[in-house]
Length: 69
Image 1 (cartoon, helix red, strand yellow):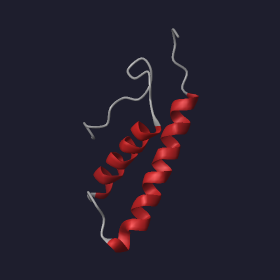
Image 2 (cartoon, rainbow, N blue to C red):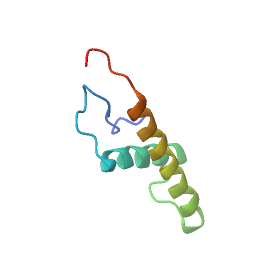
Image 3 (cartoon, rainbow, N blue to C red):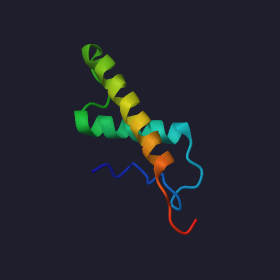
Image 4 (cartoon, helix red, strand yellow):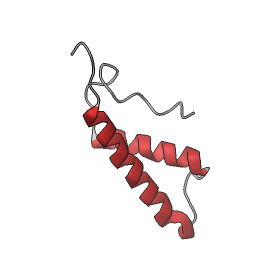
């Protein structure tokens, strides 16, 4: 779906930053919405979606258990 979103869990990525998570969330919302930059009347909804995807991604990554580590 979003080829530019990289895998953020170990062992594929050892040092995941908040910026990495934000970039992945932004790419996802851009892809799903079809907007690179939304019009002003959609900006709040767009940013809210990015924030929610970012939080969900951080929660997911912090709860994953990687075997063999």
